[in-house]
Image (cartoon, rainbow, N blue to C red; front, side, top):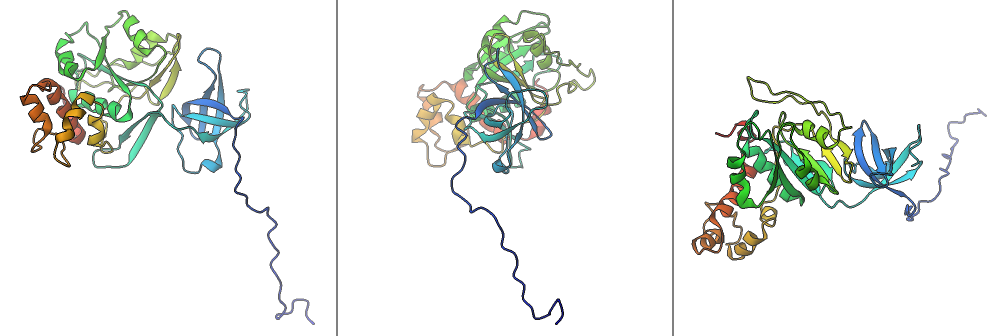
Length: 336
């Protein structure tokens, strides 16, 4: 008989694996950390308060699957979270986000691009001159802030080159708070707005974001660019999102210069919720009302006619609605 009989049957060895269990680790003793940077699959996290904490390098645990981890996330760390050189922790859980700043790739792309989590304040940095302010982009930043549940703050730079009043007048009906700065000037008013908060700085290139960061955090040493005299546009000096600690408590999240900001993901009904006084007036609107100036029977028009709503505020709100649906090309056009 042949050693390998063709009719012989051989059973496949049984897999010796432990039976699956529904019990999963709770990580009750895990360390809570704040994600400050991401670089090629490695995350820099901050453990502890802003003054006595430590940096920890971590990687995402396999169990998180395709769940994304972004700057600003609060996460649970397992493994070696000492922060010692050569140590590596694992991100095993992402805690629920209180806010989420996001953008669409463009107005025709419905895919959301999460940028920053858990920030309280969106600081919209705008130069009043050199380069000229672009109200279309400012409006879109405001829409993004309201959609994310963040407090918007308008920070005007280079006010020594031009009068900021005309620009402030545009946004006064919306009740947006603002601070004005100038080159080499005092930044105390800005520091007071930043202290104790997690703030995201946004703005297109050349408006002076890096200069502001260096002013409030001297140790930051952010690179500073110049504005092209021909195109009127700045050169990108910040190439990635970076979280920096404020000396008196709080965080600044500096983002690369942005020339467009897609808002295809924003629900118009959610936008009006950011204006409770106007939202209360729309309860009598027809079903499906878009609240625009061409919407038939919109209760906002009646409220303005009866003096129950400020006409300038309604107009400003509708401008934000229009900016959500506008094309990106508008944002590159300077105001006149």
